[in-house]
Structure formats: C-alpha cells, structure tokens
Amino acid sequence: MRFATWISMLLLLAAPNLAAQDALGLQKAQALALSRSAALRGSELGVDAASLAARSQGYAALPSISAKAGGGYDYGRLASSTATFASAASGSLAISASETLYDGGKTLALVKKYGLATEAARQTLRSTRISIIGQVDSAFYAVLQAAASLDAAASILASARLSQTIAQAKIDVGILAKSDFLQTQADTAGYETTLIVARNSLASAKASLASLTGLPAATALEQVDFSGYRDLVSRLGELDEAAIDKLSLDVATLAKANTPLLSGYALSIEQAKLAVDIARKLYLPTVSAGLSQSLAYQQSPGLSTTGSLSLSASLSLDLWSTKTAIDSAAVAASQADYAGRQGETDYLLSVVQALYQWLGSAGSIGSTAKALDYAKSNYENVLEKFKLSSATTSDLSTAEALVSADTTALITARYGFLSNLSRLSGLAGLEDSGKLVALVP
Image 1: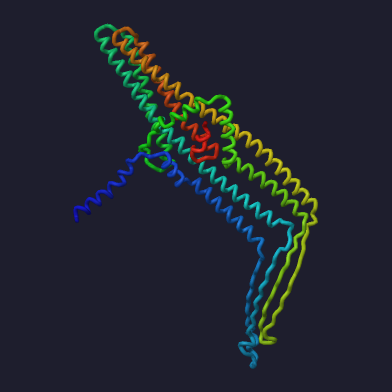
Image 2: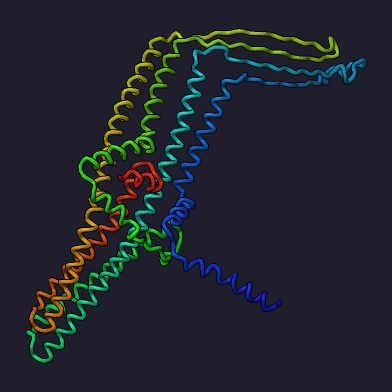
C-alpha cells in the first residue's frame, strides 16, 4: 500500500514536467494567447457595456413609476392637556406614474441606435480575436522559420569547416596556395557569423511568442509537416488566369460576408442614417400622460385620498436649430457612406493582393526546392573535384554559397506560404483557413 502511494506521488510530481515537454501546437498557442489577452478582455467588456446601454434605453419606453411616503409628528400639540399621541401624528403615501404616449418614434429609434452600437461592439470583439490569432500565427511561424534557418546555418558551417579541413591538408603537402586557404578560412568565419545571427533571431522570435502565450521561451513547438500541403501547393500552381480570377472573386465574396471591418462600415452607415431620422423627429411633438394617487392621514379629518390624471404635449419651436441638426446629420451620413464605400474598395484590394502573395509563395516552393536539389548536387560534385584538385577554392566557395542561398529561399518560401495563408484568412474574417482552402479548385 505504501509502495503504491509513493508511485502515485511520483507520477503527480512528474506530470507537470512531462506536460512541459509536450510540443506546443499552433491551436494551443492561439488558445493561450486569447485566454490572457487584455485587449480581448477589454473588447468583451465593451460588448457588455453596449448591451447594458441598449437595455437601459429599452427601459425608457416603459412607464415611469414612483412612490413617496412620509410621516410627521406635531409635538407642539402635546402642550395641550387634551392632545394625544395619535392627534399629533400624521402620514402620507403617494404613487405616481407617467408614460409617453407619442414622441414620433424617437424612443424606438434610440433603442435601435443602441442596438447597432452593441452589434458594432461585437464586431470589434471579433476583429480583436482575429488580430490576436494572426499575431500568434506570425510569431509561431517566425520561431519555426528561425529554427530552420539556424539548422541550415549550422549545416552550411559544417560544410565550410570540412572545406577548410581539406584545404589545410592540401596546404600541408604544398599543393594549395596560401591565398586559397585563406579564402576557406574567410568563408568559415562568414558562416560562423551567419550562425550567430540566426541564433539571435531565434531567441528574439521565441521571446515574441512567449510574450503572447505566457509560456517559457524554451517551450518546444510542433513542427509543420509540409508534405500535408503538397496537394494544395500543386493545385495552386496549376491555376490558370481564369481560375485565379474566379478564386479572387470567391475570396472577396467570402471576405465581404465575414470581415468585421466591412461589417463595421455597414453599421456606421446605418447608424448615420438613423441619426438623420432621429433628427427629423424633432419636428414632431411629444405627448405624455400622468397618473397620481395619494393617501393622507391626520386625526382630523382622518384618512383622505386624492388623485389626478394629466395629459401634456410639448413641441420645440426652435425650428432653425432642428433644421441645422438635420443638415449636420445628413452631412455625417454622406461622409459615412463615402468612407464606407472607399474603405470597402481598399480593403477588398488588400484581400486580393494578399491572395496573390499567397499564390506567389506557393509557386516559389517548387522552384526553390528544385534549385536547392541542384545546388546540393553541384556542391557534392565540386567538393569531390576539389578533393582531387580539379576544382578551385573559388568554385567550392561559390557552390557552398549557392546551397546556403537556396536553402534560405526554400525556408522563406515554405513559411511565407503559411504566413500568407494565415494573413489572407484573417483579412477574410476567418479564425482558421479551412473555408479559404476549400475555395481552391
């Protein structure tokens, strides 16, 4: 029994360490960032505040009811020998109610106005979520790209050191010029610098991701299986001009239906038009009714009741002020309409541009992969020739540089493809790329 207890305790102590060793996936990183984002909490509170304001305005359409109670004690009467406590006491209770019977629809229009404000707050919340997810995607891929670049830098440095070792052996037996050996040393030193820069870039990228997720910078990340994107990249590469135009139209339609920013433009236009309608209603009168009922008690005459019913109407005769308010609201509505249409045009253009950037990065994956295969094959060939003294150090240096450049290009193309897909999804108002990828024929 004691042995089993010790085993259970050891498993409990080891659980956090085991969990800490699990690789962090992209979706988990997104969830962590969303859970600790102060900006998201602020947007959620904005929705709550707007909802409460709308509810409060809705209550304004209900009758207003109030009650008032009071009591008194005339201690001066106690000076009379015939006075009693009851004769010196008095009390009253009054209940009143009022209701606006007609205001030209101003109250209902205000209720609608606050409802639009609530929906605008919800769209802001969606926009904040999408923005945070985009930041996490960018930071996550930046870490993976920096790590891949670091591995590539270490690999090319190893190749440069191998070249320097071979050159050292040649110069020891007197079959290589000192200047050629110095070139291999310079190449090695240069790639050592590249490795240092890559290591610093990785540390910076990890720090950025850690600030979003709250996890240690040393947390391991799940690697991307690029083979899973092979079919998608191939389909994108086979699109002709007509298919690309169709895809652009479909993506723009998807963005118009889902993007919080475009929804915000539409809400702003609707709010501005509603403000014009509210201003016009200032020409109309407001009619209100009131009912009051009160009870009063004194020893003489005892309990008494009074009640009243009132009806009132009000109308502003500052017609010039009303006209100015209407004109101002109309100008604001026109400005909102123009701003919304221009904003939509600009935004959809940015969506299409992001689509072409994604297509470009997809197309470059295949070409850079082929170039890297050629560069590696060429390097191996030149290295063998260099060993046999049929290739110069300059030839070897050029071959190494080509491998380095093409490796960097492939890494950039792959993670650029993922980053551009994430950016395009965010512009389309999506929190993941599923619907977007489904549009690709």
